[in-house]
Structures are given as structure tokens and as C-alpha cells.
Length: 153
Image (cartoon, rainbow, N blue to C red):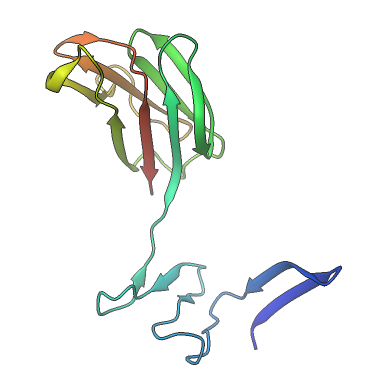
């Protein structure tokens, strides 16, 4: 069986399913599998198995005053470049700058429906190590109290 499990003090310390392994059908219907390149595929009820693409970095941060990360994954820091102008710095670089992203901000008093987040790509293109964004109301940049960013690749 192509699984390696290590025990220490009656607890599993690591478990590894080898690339190319197929999980026995009696574990679950549509069980996940890994190809020889290590790509995970599974069927989540959509009728066919497909490669899974995960969120490679995410962050929720306070963009007012001293910028502060509330929670994150693969984000080392946030740089405050000025009013409403932020750079999300990755802990582990992306393989290239061709990633997708999702941006959101909490609605705030005084900003109304005209407030939005944009990618600062006109001034600074996304890189493998960082992603720059702006919070705007109309054409005015402003500091937002709650910003979330997710990077997919």
C-alpha cells in the first residue's frame, strides 16, 4: 500500500500518500488521487475528477493607523505605501506573476457604494513576491478598516 505513516508516543507524526497512489475505493466514493507530478485531483460531486487549485496566499488586515494583519496564510507582511495604498508581501514566492486574486473590503461609514478596491497594476505590476492594491472612493484613496485578499495559482 503506497502510504507511509510514522508514529511517536502513540500519535501519528507524519502521513504521506506517495505520488501516483490511488486510495482504495472502500475509503470513499470518488476518492482523491495524485498524479506522478504530485497534482491532487478529486470529484466533489460535479461528475468528474479534476485537478484541485488552492489558495496560495490570503490575508485579512486592518489598513488604518498602523497596518496590522488579523489572520493570514503565506503572507509575511503588509506594507503601507500611503493612504489606501498597500502591498501584500508573500512568505513563499509564487512560481510566476500570472496568479488570480480576489479582493474585498468591509463597507465603512462615509465611503458608501462608490468605495472599491483596485489592483495598483497601472503603477506597479504584480510580482512573484508581492501584490499591490488600492482602496478608493471615487478617485480618492482612503485607508480601510478591513481588507481581505486571496491569491490563487
